[in-house]
Length: 395
Image 1 (spheres, rainbow, N blue to C red):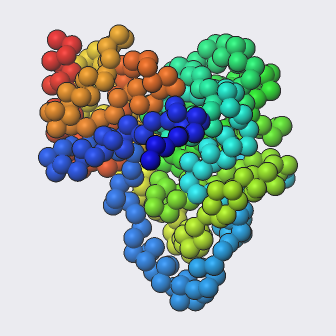
Image 2 (cartoon, rainbow, N blue to C red; image 1 turned 120 degrees about the vertical axis):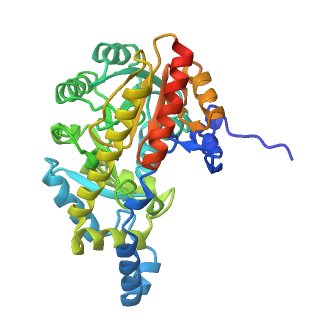
Image 3 (cartoon, rainbow, N blue to C red; image 1 turned 90 degrees about the vertical axis):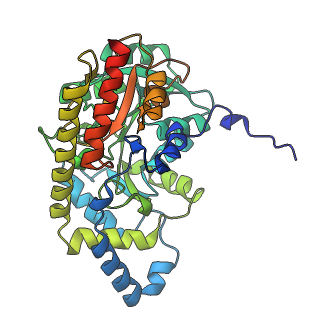
């Protein structure tokens, strides 16, 4: 049979990272390519105990349909936590979603007509970019600087694209760069969104994992007119397999988001919602977060030290204050894709910056490294191999 694929999927390609990770199954390959949390970070024993208990106490409630909005006690617990971070709920609502990825899908489903513009950081999370593409959105990238988007480029993009429906950004320890948007730029981005009357989708899956520096207020905490939709995730602090996240938005949108979610999955995984609620309220959740921070701080420092020791001095990279990633940049004009390909032949997997581009035809000098998944020995050996390659390339 000949299949006629819908036009809206024509510009959506399979994830480059998923394709590359097929190589990671080679036991000889050192993989810096994943975006996974460290496997030793999962609270396995606690999850097993909670699962056994809730299934024994109330199996029907665990296995029956749930509310589209999410399990009420978990929602209330998250609201209390977010209130402490400056996000109020006088005019806002919080829904549980099936991972932060679904929040991106619901935003595009609700607000983007085919051919309309979404402004994104350049580079940015490919999962979100492909989601927006699947709704026929036109992506316009704004270059990232070490403290967030280039503001003049952002304003030019807003001027040039009056059909922009929202700005997508990852303000904390951005995927893929590891950059954090400064408070000054957060305020400026919000002011531009007000001036040009567009929404902001603030994607914050890594904000809890700050292990250095001072916390920066969320854009949602600065929101005075309901134009910021905020989303967080349990994937990096509990387990990705749960497929649980949450989104905060102006309460006037409650019925719209509920209807959009019901078109997709009716409700998010109820058993895992109960597990998250129990872990947050009956166990030492803050202690668990502190252990994650300590683990990632150590691994990030190890990778930065190894890169500093072995990489050619012309290669630029940041020292992240949280999250899971470091992005390295070859000198301007050098395409990182063939560099990454040669690194793979030498046994080290990274991800080329083009995988995170709004325009995948545009070369990128960057390549992303993940420090959460590899062992200490792999970090040291992999950075040594990549360092030798940088010297071979740059002289």
